Image 1: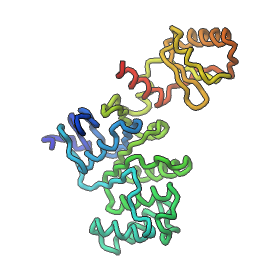
Image 2 (image 1 turned 135 degrees about the vertical axis):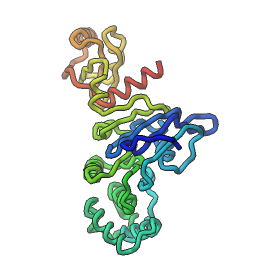
Image 3 (image 1 turned 90 degrees about the vertical axis):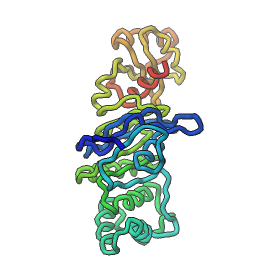
Image 4 (image 1 turned 180 degrees about the vertical axis):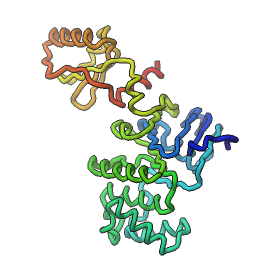
Length: 301
């Protein structure tokens, strides 16, 4: 454990590392998570997010490094739905409340409060196996909140959930945060990174960059051009000297460039030569995905 810890921080780590069979799943991670934060750990599958969160919760032991948590009251929601499908919502809540050693009267009171927040109040008698993906995640969240944790740790809580349920889930997280709960959440979705107060971008077990989304985007060193054209193979644009890199984001091609107007002219000329029609080519602010791609490619280089 760390000898000293800022009282405004709820979690601190120093050079936290976890090695499995010679491979560092988490490598020299040093973090400070503020009390009252919505802290997003953002990266693709295999980046080390789950391993890091499990160490933060004390579920696995680090290979080396130090960790300190300024609260014994925390709730953990794993990525995989781990409740009992053959129990109803109410039965799952009672079971997990008993594990927290909460008396039945308090369980009922807290469950009613949380079920109202999560929108599950009218479904207490429904079996967990019969719930949609979004409702299962809300039930898991309800159980994690029974002990009224000061810190809530969520491992990819909206993975595989439909977009509307994802929005509803994040509204709940914002409400909990306003009520004083510190939230640490991992996600592979860059649009969810935009919803966090603080973001740590993680790749191959290494924290690449940390900061609030606005600051991370403001520090992005290139311009971004969004291109939509009558072609799906546009990688040849990356050979232009005015272009840093480019890739598809849905049906649009995002091009990182050194100087916007010069790059725009070069792209227009190149596509005209190749007889590729342009629907639009415009300068846009960088997204968190642009930032993540840039910092991970810089690390590889």
